[in-house]
Amino acid sequence: MSVPSTAPASQHRWRVGRRLRAMAGWKKALLGLGVLLLVLATGTAIGAYALVNRYQSKVSRTDLLGTVAKPKDEQRWKSGPLNLLLLGSDSREGEPDQGRFPGERSDTIMLVHISKNLDKATVISLPRDSYVNVPAAGPWEGGMNKLNSAFAFGGAPHAAKTITELTGVQFDGAVIANFASIRKLVDLVGGVNVCVPYDVRSTFSSKVWSKGCHDLDGDEAEEFVRQRKEVPGGDFGRIHDQQLVVKGIMEKVNADGMLTNPLRLDSLLVTAAQALTIDKSVDLQELVLAARQVKPANVKYATVPYTSANLQTPAGSAVKLDDSKAAAMFAAVRDDTIQEWLEANPQKAPEG
Image (cartoon, rainbow, N blue to C red; front, side, top):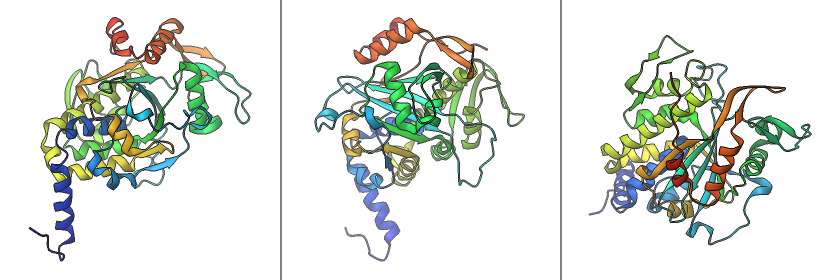
């Protein structure tokens, strides 16, 4: 049955629906990881093979890894393990609601590890205030400073160099995600449910999320993930809350009818893709194929171990990483045993 040429909108919906029906078993694993990567932290695909060309043009590209990028290898995406650097920005420059949360800029740094068998993923958050060695760049002569300063001194490529030297992990690709899109994504999935183990008080309004479970719309979710001053653990509490919202989105996408609703799915993927800047060396189609076996249930979250969140330094209050445990965690990433390491070294949520 042909689609009338006088109805371009209907024709587009018919074509999108036809492609979606052809996705078969790709849907849940890839879309779940797609939302995860595009929002936070963590996943590794933007849709499915049949749809990749549509979203390829929505994603921005630039050099994010600089001198630490792995040499070009046409085979590297066909087998694991793989490591991606995910950098998050809260910049809302040019958006109509700019200034809704003045003074909050949450640069987020995550290492996404995909296992050798390409069936599991681990998302490791590196606290932005970690006190580490930052190599020389621009006016900076090199030395100990907050991890987040690497962005100011040399942009994403210098941040990648700093993180590579810190972890010993070589990256296969890198992504910058603008977290301002989280509000749109949450609304597109019809809201999310999060369960917090402590009270969270907003510093932007009188809102309080008491210990327990809450249904959040897009506005509330954005306000929720920006909290750090009235959250147990400060930045560590915020990292935990961001992960809760990402899990909520993934659960909603998989439980709701979005996977079988062409228009809603298309809107979600377009919004997510527009929030991304991908390293110029990453082929989106290869990224999708590499992540096709990773299901949301096989994605684990962690934070680099630390001993103090209030280390006094010339750069101000900073986070002192646990040198021994952090080194062991990074070694487990390099050895592709990180999920086993986390089982042996379970992490607790910040306590209220």
